[in-house]
Image (cartoon, rainbow, N blue to C red; front, side):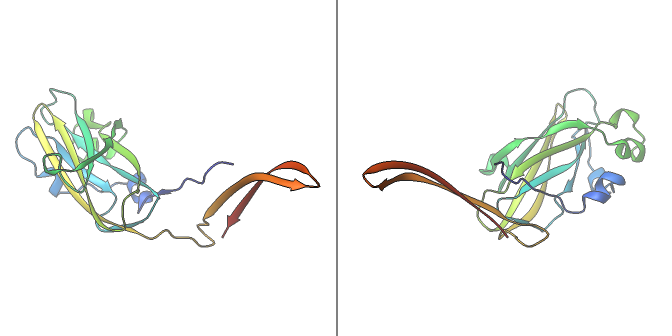
Length: 182
């Protein structure tokens, strides 16, 4: 039996259909990468153990080198942040290319799926874009809350047991599994 995987994405429809570009993210200076984190939204509550999508866009105005996007938890890399992973970079974002009038930036999207396997309470994501022109970091506060189970989002729990039974002097092996959906 497989495990039920859920992806928690706040306001994903607006990001996939017509993402809104943040004016603040365009106010970068020099050749440092420009970065905008679309998801999760600031102060979103994510249930414990759920999969969280971290996504947005990043561009290198210098265009001279490869761009990489890393995601850290509860601190920037130089301040003890925990590396959650390297985001997949290069997903289609035609809205970015159109809005910024740079056709070559049509594949500037990034994304990372991460399971919220940390303690409940407030946390911070530090999303960092790096290129030869510099480093840009955006901080996104979020909250890990209790797991949510209801009819629309059932929780599935499974326990397996096994052992031996002595019956009339014979040893009998058994396996038993219990699945609880609620």
